[in-house]
Length: 197
Image 1 (cartoon, one colour):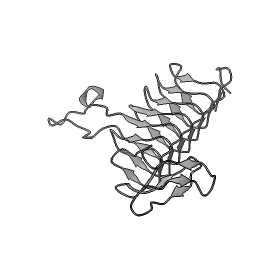
Image 2 (image 1 turned 135 degrees about the vertical axis):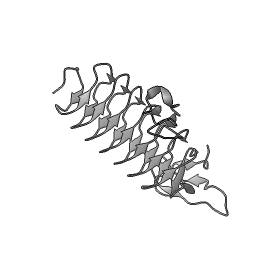
Image 3 (image 1 turned 60 degrees about the vertical axis):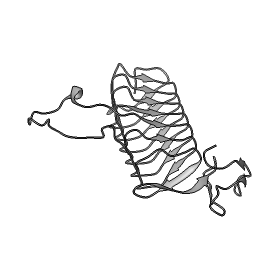
C-alpha cells in the first residue's frame, strides 16, 4: 500500500515524496499531502483531506473527511479536526490583481494559524488567518473563529464566542457568577483551574 515503512497510504492518495510522514500514520483515499508537509506519528488523515505545502501536523492527530489545511497551518499533538473544517490563510483574498492579471504565490502574504495540543475543532468550522486555538480548547460545529481561543475554552457561533470552560475530558464547565469554573470536573474529577490557564 505504501513504499514508506510503518506508514499506511491508500493507493488513491497523492502524497509528495518530499513530505515527511511519521510511523504508524494512515493516509486514506483521495487525500493529498503536498511537498514540505510534516505529519507526525500515529495520525489518521481521512478521505479527501488536503494538506498544503509546509503544513505541520503533530503526533496522534485525527483529521476527518474533507478537511482543508492550507499553507501556514501548524497543528500540535493530540488534536481532533472534524469533517469539513477549513483553515484559511489569506486576509485579503482576490483571484486577480487590480490590473486584472491572475494572482500567483508571490501576490499574497500567508497569515499563520496555530492549533495547540489537545484542541478539538467541530465539523464545518472555519478558522480565519492569524488565529491560535489554545490547548484543550474546543470549537463547536459550524463556528467561524475570527480571533484566538484561550486554552480550555469552548467557543460556538459566527463569530465564535466563549460559552464555557472545557475540561481535558471534553466536559463543558459552566461559568459561575460571570467567573470561569474552578474546581474538580464533575465528569472525570480532574482539577480545573479556570479558562486561560
